[in-house]
Length: 124
Image (cartoon, rainbow, N blue to C red; front, side, top):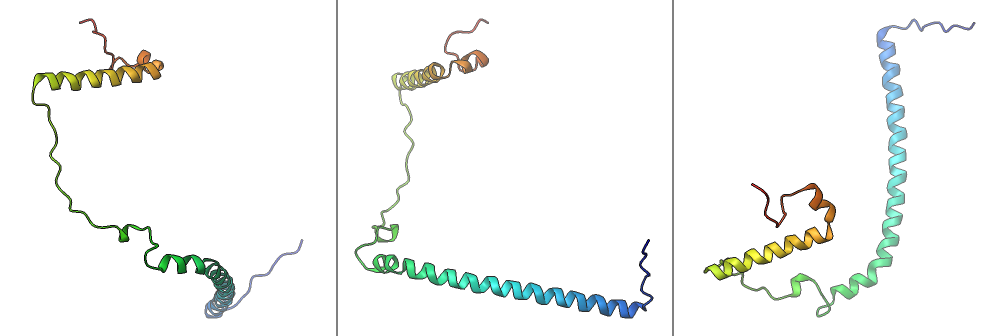
């Protein structure tokens, strides 16, 4: 069987060989990156030529539809509306009860697994 004899080189020589090998790998990586950058530049040029007419149209005044062209309105603080009497409270309660019944109608499996939103009286 063929066996490799280890290199009997001093440590300094092994360090120099390692540094040279890493330098060669770095050069290869740089060349590869530069080739990819050239490809990206070509792609950028194609996209720029393709989008130039649209950018020209959007840059003309009067044709923008962005939020920058809309007038600014003053923001007023909202005051929450709260029920002021018992009838309004009962109306809110009835609306919430109807909404929960609608959920139970559309999702009957949920009613069977959870009694949390049941509108029927539970035995005490």
